Length: 278
Ligand SMILES: [Fe+2]
Ligand SMILES: [Fe+2]
Image (cartoon, rainbow, N blue to C red; front, side, top):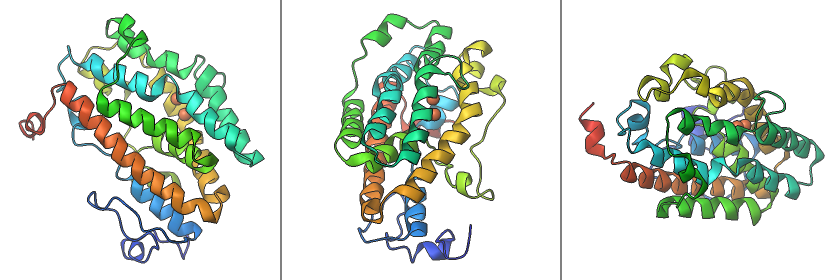
């Protein structure tokens, strides 16, 4: 990262958004920001995309009889409609270069025509199918209250607040992870990628390896989607809209964490569950 960016710990303090790298500080200060401050503010929000209960899902602590709740809620809250969420950013965007990237993203997610070979939402269903879950449930999922609120937030952010906010939420927040800094800085830690045999659904729940087609496709294509998402944000979001974009990312973190709290509760995961394994 070049000089003048606010990527280091000390520089962070000078960012116009203020410092909000700790979980307690959730609302950025709204001031005009330059490109590097904007980048740092977005990164700090993405670094908050973590949840206390996640280890229960990756370490097999969620009961086999409860795991379907997690997959059903993910499906209904964003997976099934993900290409549509990106499409909402596309139709609002006046920047041809960004639209082309969004169109490519939508095409791959909706059809798998570039890498996956099948629509990504369809490939997601290979997880519950491979785990012998009742597939009828996926046609009539009732969202948990926290999930319903998160979905309402996603709908509002992708339809009512302009292309920049829609693209930030759909392509940066939903598709992105707490390891986004690596996309912009090789020295920052990359998202850990274990061999497919070590995938939690395979290792702890007996999912056949061939049902990991979506995981494989994401490993092949997601790098491009990350790059395009960051380029759209940093090169094309008008200066006057940067504060609104950061604000919506902070809202996204809050709504997503409340959603994951609801799923954890419904899956019988408590902080005590996790402390027993610590
Ligand atoms: Fe995807
Ligand atoms: Fe993607």
